[in-house]
Length: 292
Image 1 (cartoon, rainbow, N blue to C red):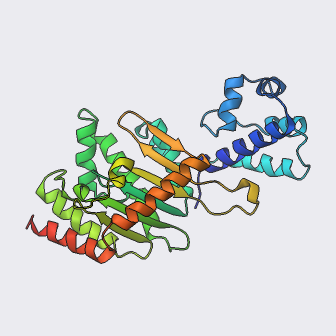
Image 2 (cartoon, rainbow, N blue to C red; image 1 turned 135 degrees about the vertical axis):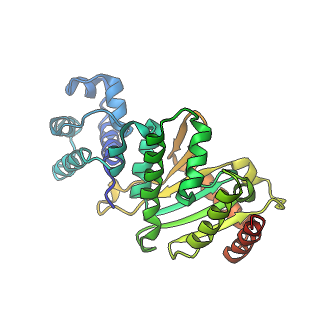
Image 3 (tube, rainbow, N blue to C red; image 1 turned 30 degrees about the horizontal axis):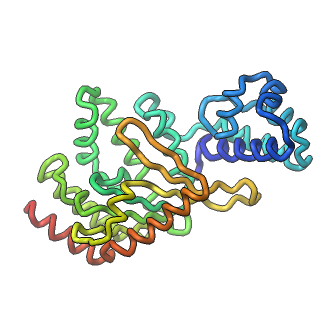
């Protein structure tokens, strides 16, 4: 899958930071060498969107850091990849800045594990469900922007049709997420039948965590998405897993090893508490009958 600029930018920034720290060069010295502000260098090293990654910057830093000769053209190649825009950039301002980063990561991931306690994840939302969520969050938003956001969701959902060896999604849902009447009975009836259809795709596993669980950890953890990425042919450039935690006014991106390990343990606890796939389908069918 084409990832746009997100993952190449993160790969390049992470490797440049590793080379700088290994060489003992300070951020101040490195930023002076390519005539940028230290804050801009920090943004480059952390893979933030915005700074232009010129070939001359990469070449100069590689010389300053005494990088292996064969690595410089490799990193210059990554800099070129950061200039490729992902499909979502065509939607401009309707994509929030913190979600732009997530879209690039999701497009590049080979495995997604997500847990949603109260709202269904975007990858499962029908157009009508999504429309109800958008109107609730942004009551005055223009209709054209609403429809653009719905199209973004539809484009994202195309990944669910890919073969499991390219992309797989394990989606844990709190029982409340399939019971809350978002958009009203008609919208929920359609949504629940959509979940049943998606649950049978070979790349998708959907399991509900019932309200009757006696294990509090899933409730403490809250909603999150764990994204894992294919191995890069050059091992040092492989993208490590990322946990995305969406909030009402912003989002967190966690990628420290200790944080990832903790969320992987949480995934095991959530999996242990969740219904099987077939029991999940039966529960969803039972709830759907309430709308008929």
